[in-house]
Image (tube, rainbow, N blue to C red; front, side, top):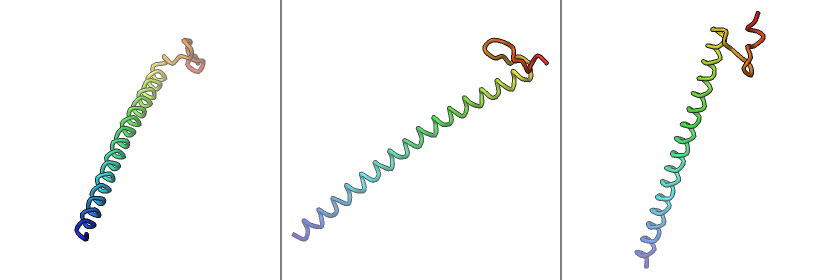
Length: 73
């Protein structure tokens, strides 16, 4: 009976460890996915900033297809 209890406890511990490892792996995957998405959004924002700066430098900035008023001065 003692051997059966020891086997049962060991089995439960092993199952708990596997579930914990699975949960940690899932968390890691979520972090990786979210970090990638955040990086893509940051990159897209940086590209917009570069475009806006380039438009300002070359006086090609427009608003709704018309040259911005501040570029006319």
